[in-house]
Image 1 (cartoon, rainbow, N blue to C red):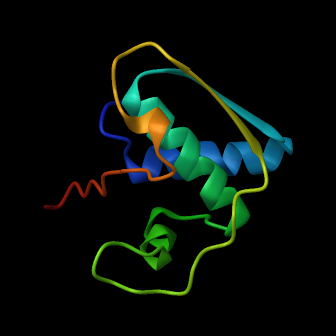
Image 2: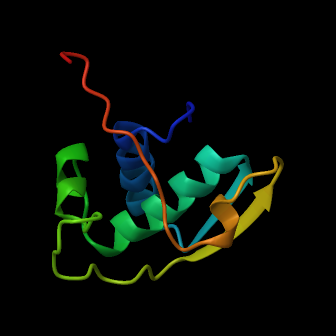
Length: 99
């Protein structure tokens, strides 16, 4: 997983977790990994299969129906001083190579 929690990487991990039938996600690392673990858990519960599917989630200023709550357990083992582990929010980057 690279820095800044890229959507495409999160969806790749989500699809792999789905294929393996994962019921636990363990994140060992800094803020990007913590955010990725939260996003993967949310994506699993909401049938996210492509990066563009993430656009259906609510963001600030864009009200949408609330997503399904994650149904896999998460364990975070932080290795940096960051705030990602203290909230239920996640940040991720929509990287487009044509931008």
